[in-house]
Image 1: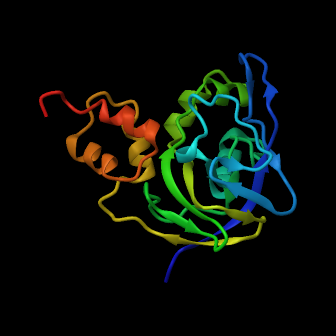
Image 2: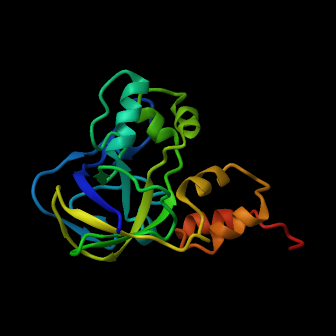
Image 3: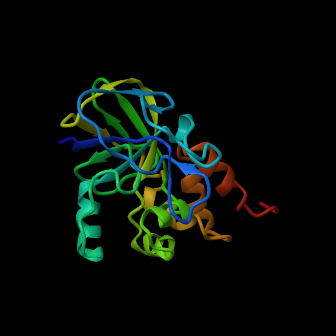
Length: 213
């Protein structure tokens, strides 16, 4: 039986400033009501501050899960509402092993997972915790970016069928763990590079291939 996920919330926001963070950022997002157009470069009406590291066709949409937020709420001792980490789409849960190349078919919209979210100082500023990059890394609950293979309109409550990628492709969490590893195991690196990674992630990981290979 195919896996399905439910879209709990669609989140967007304008550029804004955060205490302790230089420049303006689009990380502050909140649920929006009604239908939202999902376009090749992201959600209509949403803002992206740092176009060098975020956005683009390969990272058009960021997804996080309500199940992960429940885990964070327990760990942090406070509510974690949809959009807190700056995701565009909050789904109810992840399937057993999300992989790079897995697709979410909402009928009107088709998304393909491309890269885990790597924490940065912007997320730490959003959480008002200078240690949060380390906390987020240790938790290994990164969420995932996606490219838009079929643009259309989504409304909260929509259900997607998961089209799983080949098992040879790296999982989202595997790529997340590879990111800081300057000398990753060759088999894990190969599994990542054969998957349809976001271009930024591909360039980063391809640079880890030994020069004598």
